[in-house]
Image (cartoon, rainbow, N blue to C red):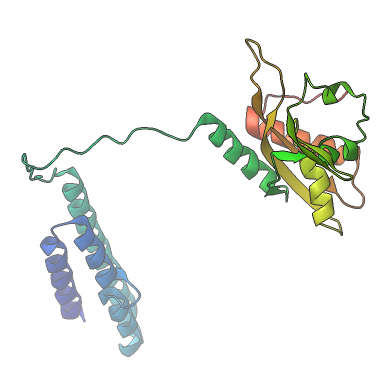
Length: 248
């Protein structure tokens, strides 16, 4: 059996020394140590030899494995440090440098959605041009509410629709809450709405369009404690663990 181990070492050495790339070494590793590899098959030979010889054979086999693994590691390190000679065709057209990235708002939206997904919320999308009823009436905002003034909200010219009134550019994302409760007839509801909003406020710190997000949770047994826990979870994940939430 010692002769068989020596033959195995020789075969493995040839596979490793013959490898000219990391990919070839990876293939050699599988052939040597894989499920159906050389050493796996050799290990199964232990059952065929006398019991008195098994400890000696097992020890020799483990030493052989260590030797081959050490040789493999050295070869991998050598290939990693060798810089491949790259042929450069100076007649080929130049490649434009890849520049650009997602907008910061897009990054923020992705992060917000990921945080709330962990709490079971799903992202929904609703119109940015909606009826007066969804933007105001359904939210118990009366006709004389300041937000419904022409100088606060963008109203769309057109024929009013019975019960729904005129169309507006959504001044907030709360219209999505009403539409979600219409869509999902039976709770629970765990909805997150992120959208552009529009208000007629223009100065050095305000633009007519901005992004807003809000969540809606409708279920049995929900308390203010759940609201506080949700706010705490979002705040620490988005702004950092040193942030604190104060409800007043």
